[in-house]
Every structure is written in structure tokens, then in C-alpha cells.
Length: 323
Image 1 (spheres, rainbow, N blue to C red):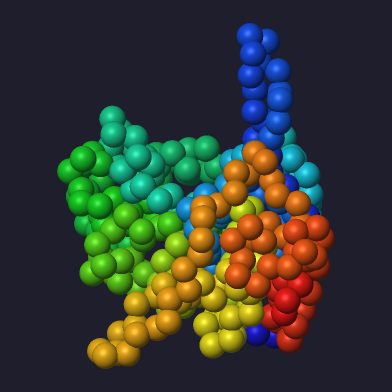
Image 2 (cartoon, helix red, strand yellow; image 1 turned 180 degrees about the horizontal axis):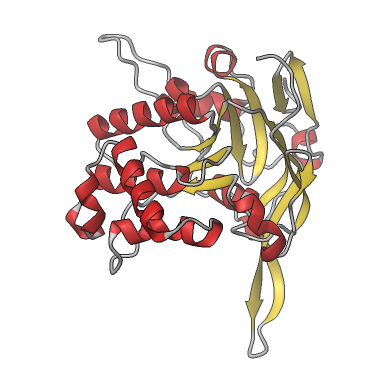
């Protein structure tokens, strides 16, 4: 990929959730959900964000979109800083940044017709008359593989795959530049996953979209993404192109994740790297490297010093003392 001005720049992003206790609900600590993440996202690419459940990848995506207020750091979109903007100032950027949610049913209002749900975006962000809004909604339904007459139906009348298509239609309604796909296919059957991925790729080409693709399914990520960011306990562990990461993983955590992917070749097994223990408590963030409590290569230095985020080869970054 040729170097260009990033569409989205995230610098030293932190997101903490306060822990409150006592009758007066005083803050006694923080859950460090995202810890000092920096990343550039380029126009037209699909950047995958992977890691175990609880690693902070969904919180990262929600904070980038302003759905969660950031604790520290900067978020720059098209050269303008948007992190920490109040809602009224952020509203004009909402058209440019959208989200596809993990649960295709919970993200839709069960008491609202699908047509009304999709029309909301046009009511809030445009001055289109009612007839044009309704026509645009019907066109959206057809574009994502549904029928115009589905405008009158309610979410419970659709399958999971159809509901996710409705969620995708809502995300592309205002012609955004960036879409955060938060586990967009994880709740679907494998055959339906393939259909939705094919739809996302087609829409990316026709609408010139950029995706931040959050997933725990490393097989899907390899098929979909141009670059992959590996997160552990809210921090960045490794970043590389999809080909680099899957052929030459450098961080021991990345190697452990990739070793869990089933091999499609009969009779050939991948050597499984089994990590001992669970993720540390993000409310009691470990000193040094956040992975050192589970890392088979950990040394005394790992327990004391946070590893530097450095470029090992062109476009391949890692945070590890032992690489």
C-alpha cells in the first residue's frame, strides 16, 4: 500500500472506566480497557483488530467513534481532531463514521418498522422530503440484498443474516468514509458469514469504504483484512500486513493466537501453543509488559519495563523485549 495521509489517526489513546464504591460512590480505581494505543488507518483499507475476549478491541472501536468518551490521547479524522468533541460539534462527523454492531437483533428497535429505523439517519442528518427519504430507504434495502417490501416489517420477522444486512444498510445510509465492524459476522452461521463478508467487500468497492474490522475469528480476518493489529489487555502487541503477520508472527501472544486456527489439510496438525492462566485484571494492570504473566519467554526485564513499540521491518511493528 502506498503511503498517504491517514484517514484516521489515533495517538496514545486511553480509555478507563472508573470503579466506584461506598455510599458516596467515590472513585477507588480504574479499569484500564484501552491503554496507550496508537494507529493510523488509511483510506480504502481494511484494518483488522484481533485479540481474546476482554482485550479492549470493542471498546477501542466505540471510543474511536465517540460512543465512549476517551480518557486521554487524540483522535484525528481527515486531519481534524475529533476526540473529546461535544455531541453538537461531533455531529457533522457522525455522517462520516458509522458502526455495524455484533448483535443484529439487539441493535434494532423491536417496536419500530425496519423502514422507520433506516429513515432516522436521513431525518437527523438531511433535509430530504419524506417521499425521497422513503425511496432512499427502499434502495438501501435492495442494495444489501433485501426486498423493497421489507420496509413495513419488524425486526422479529427476519433471520439473523437479514437483520445484519439491515444493520449494514443503516451504516452505509449516509455514505460514510469509515465503518467500524464490531464482530459483524461472529453471531452468524458459517454460510451466512460468507455472504455477509462478500456483501461488505462489494460495498467497500462501490462506496470507497474504509473498515476497522474487529473480530476474534483469525480465519475471517486473514481473508478480509489488509493489515492486522493484535491487542492484549488493552495494549498493542503487534501490527503487520495480513501476509506478514500470518507467515511470520513475532510476538509470542500472536503466535499463540495463530496456533489455535484449525488447519484445513487432513492429517496435518498445527503445534498448539497453550497459554497458562487467564487475562490479568485490567483494574490491577500489571507492571512491565502486560503479557509477561502468561508469556513463555518472559524475563525479569519483561516484569519491570514496558516494551517499546518498534518497527522490526517495513510496516511490521511489535512490542516485545525478546524480538
